[in-house]
Length: 367
Image (tube, rainbow, N blue to C red; front, side, top):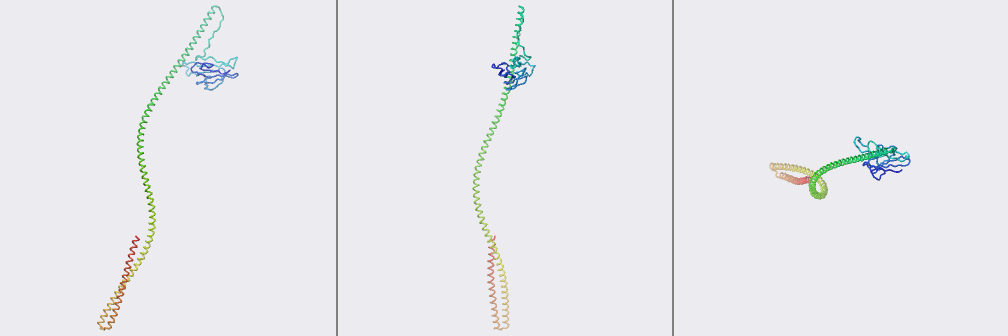
């Protein structure tokens, strides 16, 4: 009753020297009136009837189960070291206490243990024969042990060769990896060289960009100064615009007043024109009156001449004087009328000239 540990370490209950066995490979727990239970503690696993049991897994065992600490060989035709296996058997006197069979010595099966059998004593010949039999059996056992030891050494040497081959493969792989790493390093060096060249080119570009940035900054500063100047100019222009708006307002007011004045001047011009036309009519009438007065004067002169002729013809001095006085009075009246018409004509001409001057002034003011 209790756990039984199997493994390569000397502290285990069952010690197996095989290199494929872990330090503590598995643990078999036995309890009264219960089937034994096995728990795997190895790296490569434990096989129950060639079925793998993973690390940390548990399984109940039955009578006749074969517990293998190493895996089955993939190619049975090749010479391989024997597997470490145990067969579980229950004793008749204590079914709850299993017994583990001996470890397998080779792939052909278990080797039976060598035992010394007693034979009946038949005298000296029988004793000598028995001695020879014992010596033969001991020689067989010794040879068997040496064979097992040689086979174990051969297995160990084969494993050492395999380990050396694996180490060689590992070293070759490392060499290949180192070569690959060297190639990668060389490629990385080439990449770094190209990157260095690219960085240098980028540095030159950066310097050029910095110079361009400084130039742009200077231009920006000059543009800012110009913008400030333009803003100042804009403010001045806005102030001037306000002044111009005020002037425009004043000009509009002035224009409105001028329009009113123009309207008034046009009205006055029309009135002056009308007055000039009336004056022209009056002048025309005065001219007609003057013409009539001239005609009347001419008529009176003709009458005076006729009267003179009649006076000379008649010789009547008194009548002639009266007629002459009447003719002279008529002539004086005609002259007075002519003078009045002439003065009226002069006044009308002055008024017409003044009206025309007013009209011209009104037209020029309107323009």
